[in-house]
Length: 133
Image 1 (tube, rainbow, N blue to C red):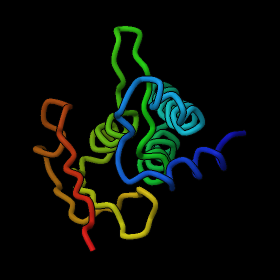
Image 2 (spheres, rainbow, N blue to C red; image 1 turned 90 degrees about the horizontal axis):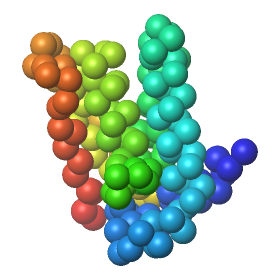
Image 3 (tube, one colour; image 1 turned 135 degrees about the horizontal axis):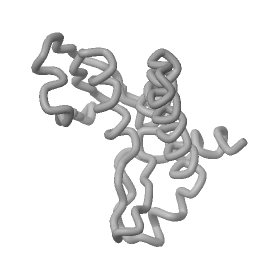
């Protein structure tokens, strides 16, 4: 429903909005669509449908990376970073991402690491490198 507006918001960013809680909330469509994709991925994963879960997580990481979700504990968390961790658990592949030049904040895989260390302890860090022209 709000995917086009969310994409416009994503495309306007080169980093996570951070100035204030109010500023972050101005990206309402991006935040809501990103959070919904994470929930969709979780629902499919919990239902045992790993392929559909991977599709939802990948769409979030690829298209709505700068989405943020408010936690009632008083902080924002980043659904795309959580989705990347879930993808790594589901695929056994650790991805290193890099934002594509001129991509409006999208990231692309620049290297992959296979094997047990990619999913060890279930909480791997994803390295993100902005492209500098």
